[in-house]
Length: 352
Image: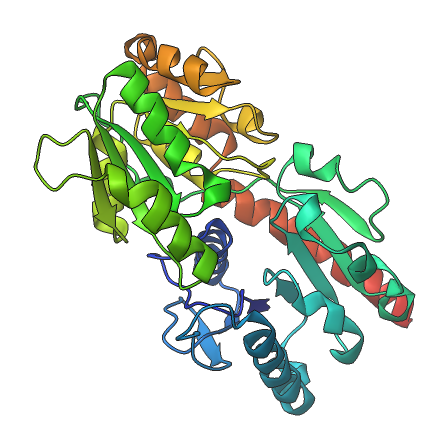
């Protein structure tokens, strides 16, 4: 099995992006189940199986086109020499599937992003790559792709439960964690926390893209304080250990995305730790968070601030139970194994 990562950044358990985290989790689960796995990703990526290094992560902002071309070229060159090593390619890069006709293997492309992030022309002319298949990561996302060719369903993301132990003891502060960019809305978390009069821990990574850096400097940095009792504290690029501690002890986790989100690993991780989630009503958020039981789904900053006053009524055990039932890494692995088998069986029939 060859997994294809997003080309710009390294992939590891410390990755800030949800697609990268999901790839690391799934690939690790598949390797543990006895499958031979490889990941095409930037130099320095840390995965369970074999790394097919396609080049270095970008050192400057906004170099996507150059790096994506290098990434794809390295993968295609390797496949030209070693195609028989793999049965199927699982693409999580957001774009490599457009080269599927040159791969000579079945390709499953998992679409992690909201529909408007993809160009319509990318999905046209796929008849030449009949062995290219698509899946989404939530039912809400799938509904936005009604005419997607070779669509094979939605598989919800999952997390490794053992990495996120539950704790009932919480601190006074609430948490926002993720990529620091306008679409994820950390500035709205600041507003909600200030309206509610509760301290906020803002944790995440500013990617080396000019618009992300400008947003951080203008909208986030002016609100930050260095002292322990500051209303807004910033934790820069937390590793998995620090991230786990933040999620376990937060009074609540805020999800303030401004786009229609396709999933939320942060919500799953928080709930696994027994921490309630207060989220905007953005597509898949309402599939992950059970309103009134594992947190609250709201429609505005004002409602988010009001919900923070009610988080003490959310039982940590109920949060954990929802993740155990729906969002485990083991369940995700089994779902993808079944999907791989379907695709390979169909490919064999076409070749017969």
